[in-house]
Image (cartoon, rainbow, N blue to C red; front, side, top):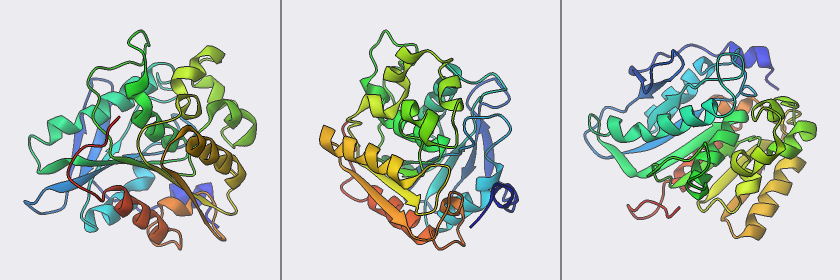
Length: 273
């Protein structure tokens, strides 16, 4: 199985363009766009790393290139993280602003805003699920934004989907509480589990041997989502750990591509939030 060192050693694949959506050095996204004039489905990709500043989007370059080859425009988001100005509420503000910036990108590229899929890995999976749920936030919330970009579906790769349980059940541990400044009342606005039902389909993939985000933890979240009325599904990849899910040459990659393809199927109409 791949280690953290293997993940960090992924080959660098430069984007077609780096675009800033804000003034902070980490408020940018890397854009990978297929060479076509036809409407292109969009993958908003959010990296993990327990929301820590030491981990950035660079290891996902090969993943982005593989998705571009498969016909997707990829908007790989960077954002402020714990240790560089992130945490509550800035990490959430950044991811929301970065996602909404897809509308600006669509003025320059033939992006299909009817088919926007958010894919997130680990802590990035938490943020991907949260993006889908944010239309439910009350206008009084610090995380509230008007007219959020509609999300068709979420593909969550070993996602830290329940912040409260994640403290003891995942390898991110105390970072789950640090993200909200250890203020328990904030789980209601920041944790996907507390925001169920999310209102869009979400497909979860996890390795059977993942020790950072265990399959049992995700099974409990998906069961709760289905009970709440969501279209949610969990796939477990045998003999797979945490980092294979973002590695195009791994045995887990076909399952990831299948979930992304399924998430973009259907008529050209934004999913209801």
